[in-house]
Amino acid sequence: MPATVEHQPRTATRVPGGSFLLQGAKASETFTPEDFSESHAQVRRTTKRFFTEEVAPRTADMERQQEGVARGLISQAADLGLLGVLVPERFDGLEMDVTTQMLVAEELAAYASFSTTYGAHSGIGTLPLVFFGTPDQKQRYLPRLVSGEIMGAYCLSEPQAGSDSLNSLTRAELSEDGRHYVLTGQKMWISNGGWADLYTVFAKVDGERFTAFLVERSFDGVLPGPEEHKMGLRGSSTTPLFLDGVRVPVENVLGEVGRGHVIAFNVLNMGRLELAAACVGGAKDTIAEAASYALQRQAFGKPIASFGAIRQKLADMAVLTFAGESLLYRTSGLIDAALKGISWDEPGAPERMLAVVEDYAIECSIAKVHLSEALDFAADEAVQIHGGYGYHQDYAVERNYRDSRINRIFEGTNEINRLLTTGMLLKRAAKQRLKLMEAIVESSGSPIGDAADGRDPGGIGEHRSLVGSMRRATLEAIGVAVKRYGRSIEQRQQVMAAIADMMAEVYAAESALLRTEKIASRGRSEQALDLLAVLTRRSLGIVRDRARIVIGACAEGAALASLWDRCDRMTSALPIDLPAARDRIAGRVLEATGFRV
Image 1 (cartoon, one colour):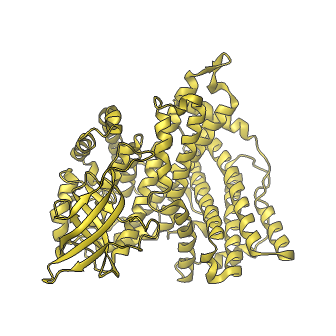
Image 2 (cartoon, rainbow, N blue to C red):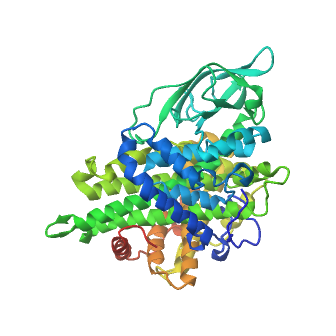
Image 3 (tube, helix red, strand yellow):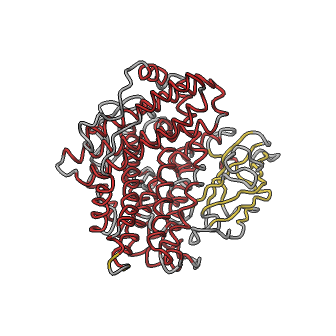
């Protein structure tokens, strides 16, 4: 996965994952969509053209599960190289950077069912082999996955084990001759389950050692179940997978016996980021649908796009999309910068690359949660803008509303990802990978100050101050919680989730701030500043609300009053004219009939 595009973020040194909470970053060292290279733009144009000309005209056929349509489109995507963006060239891949993969995922997201089919194949269906396969396994399967000759699927969930994925009942027993593992069990919710030719299946060897296996559909005893009847994603394949004494050659063990959790968790990090990219694309498409309808629909003698309540909805959809897009590509840029210079030809390259991705697991979880919820918000508001027609199957927003809901469950539920966000931060602090406690002490020992002093209302300077106040409030809330609960904090899930929300708002708001600073340096900042103004006030409010939860759970009496007084001052800011900012944002969205910065 070395970068073969021309541009990389100009970072002087590698930025450790999670460090955004400890100190501010510089716009000049942060990757944003404004930094896309010509290679990025070219792949984006190719993907967009493929979607517009080939995928979009077949959505009705895929919704009806017309046989062969999705599989044929996957083959066409393969002809364009889209199935092997991250696959090494020696296995017929493009060997491009993570940002390129995010762009492809974003452009294919306007129809969520095909986006899911693509992501399940090229992401979690292929990447386990890329990172953990033996040379023989890669040679046997990767070129065929990249060419679309075979389709991949990833089999982790089981009927009794959703979020608790290690609680697997699928067993693998070594045959008497030592040449096969015999797999027996059932997997659930398998994307591409009915179409796949190669399954990455997780099972416990001897009922204890969690292990990954490469299982071909042609093996005796492999039986995909019937298609599930789903709320959404009706144009994709989702089935159970039954394994009845399947004899899998020992050569098809993926990675090491007993180390399947390493594969499962590392692949999910990339899956979360790619899902976030798909949510960006879905949100942009939803905004375009809502804006187009608002311009056409008449009420009381004029387009509903002229009504302030409708304009507020369009503006808030755009604000969350701006924040999500900013943090998504900031994250992919950080990963690409850290991967720069690593070659697949080096010994241990996969391990080094995986270590980079794992380093940004906090950011990947934040991206997944933030953007899946932003898309849900946009889908809901788009239905509201359409009124009764939004509830009718003749309009795309009805399908988008149903399709979007699964994203908060995919790739680890948002609840699990919130707990992971805080848990990973605290574990890294305990191992001294991040100097979190030092940052907490420094913050709590500094003068309080207010979130903003009012000297530059709505300007970049004020927003920078607001982000700094959010960071300090978050650090101090973590300090209070750790002092109160110590190691048992992991049992306080509501406190952990509240801290995760605070961290996410710091990352989102700062990402949007840095992007706005970069845009302003290039002489066009009006729309970005309006988006940022609405975002920072929203983020500050969330940080304040979640801090109230943490402090209320961790203190009482005089200590409670003192802690809240300090937090209250840190998270207070003078009001600004948000209706005017939203009106300007909506005006630009309507002018472009879609999201625009």
